[in-house]
Image (cartoon, rainbow, N blue to C red; front, side, top):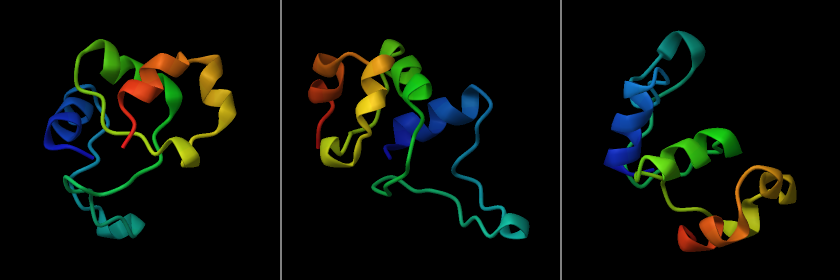
Length: 76
């Protein structure tokens, strides 16, 4: 996660940074890893704020939504 992506995600209605103890969720911080759906990743990429990607942890079906060159451009 990056601060930029977390702010973007909150802006589009998916607040990942605020702790939600009632759900056992501590909230995410810059530098944390998180499983992100391919569609949200592509949306963030299109807005210029996609986080880094662990390619070895990315399911091959993500390629149904996100072009490989986009994933590689954000590889960590």
